[in-house]
Length: 111
Image (cartoon, rainbow, N blue to C red; front, side, top):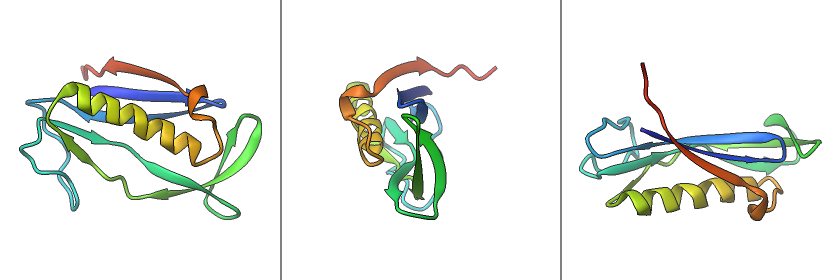
């Protein structure tokens, strides 16, 4: 599994990219189990009140979470590109410039 992480405004968002041969989570809405690469990550947006308070760029932002929407891909490159775009979009939804998001991809080797 790869961890795709975005950092900006003093906060981090990390999603999981399950690779060919790894068992991706199965639940309602999960992509076809035949997809070689499956991306799973939180989705959220800014709300005026309620939600969860987060500090982003020194300001308190209220965030509401949506059910993660797993997505399947045929190639690793497609999956990583979509993961990076997803993370940048989530930050934009809470007022962070997409260009300010630093993305890293690392292999998660559970011991």
